[in-house]
Length: 270
Image (cartoon, rainbow, N blue to C red; front, top):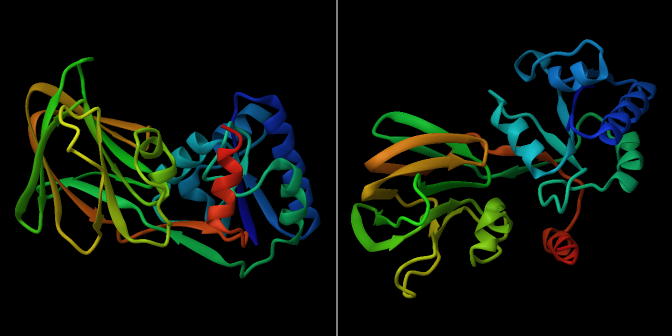
C-alpha cells in the first residue's frame, strides 16, 4: 500500500507526529511519501499530489488543511484526517487514537463517499466544493440581490449580505454558524443559507440534488465567489450560477464512527 502524508507546516509538533506516522506505516510494510510542502518543511524529498499515485492520503491538520488538500486533487483519493486544529469536523481521528488506527490500516479499507457540488457559469466550471460556496459582496456592509431558480422556476428573491450554497458535509461548517441545520451527510442535497437577509422570511432551504438549481445574482455591488475558503473568484454584479452534484465525490477512509456521535463530541469543544 502506498500512502501520501500531508501535514500543516506551521506547527512543529504536527510535523513531528507526521514523521511518527511514516515510521509506523513503513514498519507495517507500506510505502510512504511526503507531500512536497510537508517534505520541504522536514528538509527531505517529497512529491506533488498529482504525481503521488497513492492508495490513501493521511492529513494531519484542521479542516482548512483537509479542504486545501482535496481541492488540489485531480482525481479522488481516500483521505484520513487526524485533527491538529481546533474542532476539525472533517478529521475523524484525534492524535491520541490515530497511531493505533493507522497501525491496523490495511489495503481494502472501507471508504465513505461525501457529495461535492460543482458550480458553473454557462459552460465554464467555476469550481467544486466539498463544504460550501459563498457568494458575498466585495465591499463590506453592502447587500446583494439574489434569485433562486429551481427547475426553471424562480421560487424566491431576496436581498442579503451573502448566500451560502452548502453540501450536507458543509452543514457543520459556515452554514451552521449562519443558522442552518445539521444534515446527515448521506442525504444528497443543496443547502441554501442566506447571510443576514433583509427579510426574516428568507430562511434556509434544503433542495434535492436531483433538481436543477440556479442562483442568479443581480446587484449594483460587485460580488465574489469563495469555494471552500480556498479559492476566490470575482463575479461582477450580474451572473447566473448553475449548481450541480459533482460526478466525483470526496472519499474518506471510513473509521466506523457514528456521524451524530462525532458531531455531538465536536460541538462540546466549542
